[in-house]
Image 1: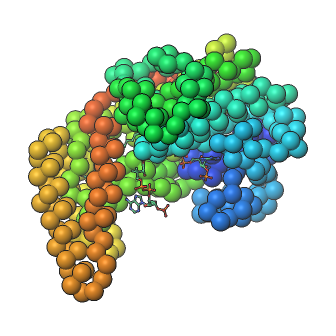
Image 2 (image 1 turned 135 degrees about the horizontal axis):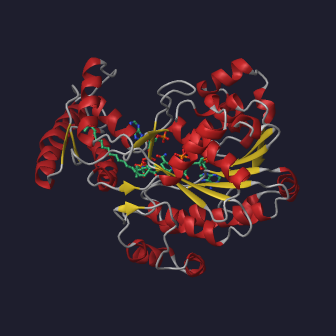
Image 3 (image 1 turned 135 degrees about the vertical axis):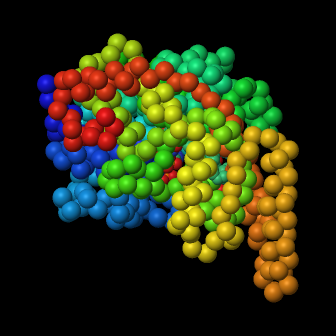
Length: 427
Ligand SMILES: CCCCCCCCCCCCCCCCCCCC(=O)SCCNC(=O)CCNC(=O)[C@H](O)C(C)(C)COP(=O)(O)OP(=O)(O)OC[C@H]1O[C@@H](n2cnc3c(N)ncnc32)[C@H](O)[C@@H]1OP(=O)(O)O
Ligand SMILES: NC(=O)C1=CN([C@@H]2O[C@H](COP(=O)(O)OP(=O)(O)OC[C@H]3O[C@@H](n4cnc5c(N)ncnc54)[C@H](OP(=O)(O)O)[C@@H]3O)[C@@H](O)[C@H]2O)C=CC1
């Protein structure tokens, strides 16, 4: 049997969300560990005044690609950007590009999504569900497609305590929902959103669950794999430790605590903090692509890509490590000396918000006003409170994920393949 790296040799890979956090790490790993991959086709949109090509050129300068650049200074030749806006009909891909993709792609990795917790339902549905549906219908036309890997989230079914590696049905049929929301006024959609998302905390987890159902329903004869990572953090080892490019989830909280701004947050000391490094997730994703193409499972296999069942870590321990790290390595230009605590009590939380956040912010803003500057601290705290309010659902409770498929994949790889290079960090 060939190694994973050998399997990717000569393959044409299509990646959505390549400019995002996970997409970039996926590209880097493919280019570095599977140097004989034929080409990476990436769907990219113009953004913030930059054309598609300018964005891709900028991205390739990123430090993340240093090791790839050292090995192959011409690595950019393997990256083929395709202009696409995923919220548009037909994903706004030109007929010529559709022709190219349908004739050459061997494997699809669908990473693109809106991961914002405050996204209006219509937009989250458009990107996370309808774009997935459209990508699947494009995939159905691909003549040499061997696998379609969809990136979901371990929290798609966070309304359950125990989560198996199965696709759970939803009370509302995704297609009916898509049809109904199409003609509804934005204000009506806003009003019915809480009823639709039910016991999920936000439109993100709800639309990711809908997307899984769509993947199942529209998969036809495709070989499908669904990856459900938990909270994806900075790289553990590859291409170097500690790479991250965003303030999502806990990383923003850590920085705000290190700057001495955040002093309190609602979280349970004993709840499992299911963090997983991005390089581990990407290694599993690439292995799942290989497994799906080679073993062609009859139904879509779901991989709960989580750590709590293998190596549990708790928010209380994180608080301890984060605070001691910042005391040893203080950040520059901190607002105050870092000193943050988590609490599960609503009253204690409100007390510290008042005493440690709002009161110092008022004093500081008063000082700014008196010295002729624009007050800003209260505004910063209001945004911070909104952000931590959206995160506390996830830091205050526990989930138990069954990871049999992930373990099966790992043991299978250990047994039959020589994949030290590709999977050295995840196994
Ligand atoms: C007490 C100390 C110890 C701590 C221990 C305890 C920690 C507990 C942490 C618990 C975290 C639990 C998290 C669980 C999440 C699980 C979910 C499942 C995982 C997934 O499937 S996907 C990833 C999850 N998605 C997210 O995390 C996105 C959440 N974010 C949002 O929805 C929005 O960002 C938010 C919060 C609504 C804010 O929106 P907005 O106000 O519009 O701000 P922007 O995001 O647009 O950012 C504006 C601007 O500010 C920069 N920024 C953001 N944060 C920081 C920061 N901390 N420091 C500095 N700058 C920051 C951001 O980059 C933007 O800059 P631009 O230049 O791009 O404009
Ligand atoms: N980060 C995490 O902790 C976790 C993430 N996931 C899942 O992993 C996947 C990747 O997440 P992550 O990399 O963190 O997310 P990012 O927000 O970093 O990246 C999102 C990507 O989607 C693209 N995208 C968004 N909107 C559009 C659009 N309208 N048209 C074209 N492309 C678009 C973005 O492109 P652009 O640069 O143009 O905006 C970007 O490349 C998602 O499916 C997410 O649900 C799952 C669990 C945890």
